[in-house]
Structures are given as C-alpha cells and as structure tokens.
Length: 365
Image 1 (cartoon, rainbow, N blue to C red):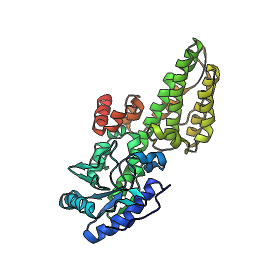
Image 2: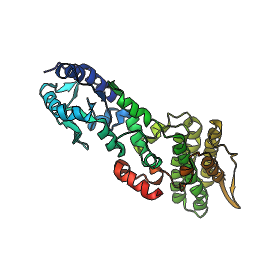
Image 3: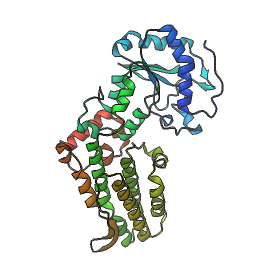
Image 4: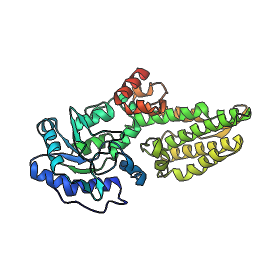
C-alpha cells in the first residue's frame, strides 16, 4: 500500500486533487508505465473547478480525483488494466479524505473511451471523448457558428477552467485555448440577443405594477435582473456558471460593483416605480460599459416607454448597434433569438450536448 497523507481538513478540491496526482498518481505511473505520454487534469464537473467548494460540497462527488487523458490507442492498450492495477495499490484515503467514489449522483466513468472504478478517483479518458461528452464534438478545431451557439456556457466554463496538472503533448491546453471564449461575431450576436431580451420585457415591470400585480411585476424584475447580469458576463467575455454559483461568480466581475447596487434596489423595492428606475439605471451602466470598451457603441437614452409612464432604455438601438457590428454575413442574418443559454435554462437540455446541438440547428436552420 502507498503511504497515507494527512491534513485534508479545510482544503479545496483542486488543491486536494493536485496533491493526489503529484504525491500518488504521478510517481506510480512513472513506475508502471514510464513511456506513457498523457495529460492529467480534473475535467468534468464540480464546484471545485470554480473554486466555490466548501464543507457542504464534500457530501457528494468530492475528493481526490484525477483524470488521465491519453490517445485512443493508448486507452485501448492500457487504460482498463491501469485502473484495475491502481485499485490494488491505492491508499484508502489521502490527506484525510477517502478516495473511494462518492457516487451520488454521478458514477465513475465507464464507456468506450472512459474508464474508472468505485475504489478510487483515478480515471482514464480520451480527449475526443471528453469533448464529445461536453459539447458533442470530437475536435475543437474548425467549429461552425451553429456549433458555438449550441454550447452551454456552464460547460464551456467547466472545461476551460479545469486545472491541468500535466500535459505532455499540449493537446488539452490547446483545446482549452480554442474554447476559451466565443469568436467575436458569435459574441456580438449574443450581445445583440441579450439586449433583445431586455427590450422585450423592460416595460412590463411598470405595466404589471400599474394594475396592482405586485407579484407579477417582481417576477419580471427578477428575470430582467438576471438578463442584466448575463449581459455583464458577456461584456467582460466571461462564461457564467450554472444557477447555484451564478451570483457568486457575477460578484467577481469588475462591472458588478456598479451594477449590484441597482439590482439590489430593484429586487428589494416595495414600489414598482422605484424598481423600474433601478433597473433602468442598471441598463444605463451596461450601455456605458459597452461604449467604454468600444463595442457596438450607441447613445443610451433613459426615459418613458413611448407615451406610457414606464422607465426604459432605448434597447432597440442597442440591438441594432450590436447586430451592425457583426462582420460575418451569415451570422448577421441569423434571427435575433439567441444561443442555447438565451433560449432555455432547462437543465436536461443544457446537460445533453447532442440535444443542445440538435435543437439549435433546428431553431436557426
């Protein structure tokens, strides 16, 4: 048996897994498969990929985990054998944490190009299979616009945030670099569609409030607050995570300091008039930031919604400016409906990469 390590209390998952690789997995692979060229990472899911894991995170799918990424030929020749051999020599725990799989809700990897075991957190994958599972692609090269529109941003964030402990041939880091952020025209298209979302509903906070529908007005305001936050992520070229960490991640954006007070005031307001004014102030901050970074500039105007007493911004001008900035004629011709995360937040859809791709092609083609 390999020597045990102590001191896992209070440690975050990436640090724990990096140590597990460095202290246990790397020297073992060096002895048993000295000629193996591979990458080592943590590439699937988990709050630790974003640095948000804490004591509560330890109740499932948390612990010493390492994913070894090899070619298909290496996988077929060695992967299952190495998983089995590691089961025989692995310690029961590392730095006070058990290495046995915490199987709720995700089991160890097992497939044509993935192998793991309940006894430990060491897995073998091919890069192609990881990309297929995340995005329904086998390579990050030569992606077309509809493929980009069908990628869930939370999955892009997880894959590109994955820590790389070792990378012999650079393929993993190269794939992360290719997916680090959207191409410019896809980015501008998503900005276009995000302003369109705001344009469609911004007057409804006031209209619902005007007829005494306080609950309905608040629901619309909350939707618009999320749309503001998502546009903040877009303007800073950052992928947002799934809902659990959406607010925590937003707080790390530079624009959050100017937006958050307005959003807090909007959501805590007892009067729809104050709520709509606070949201309009947030829209104005977004417009100013967009102009400051020199992208799709327009002159923001906050005022009444036509002849109605509802405070709004000239979001249609923002839509037109962002669409006009798109260079690719095919992307510019796309209907202004949005990418995957802009048309649905349904978890089964965002998690199923093949379904995501199929839906976006049907929507746009």
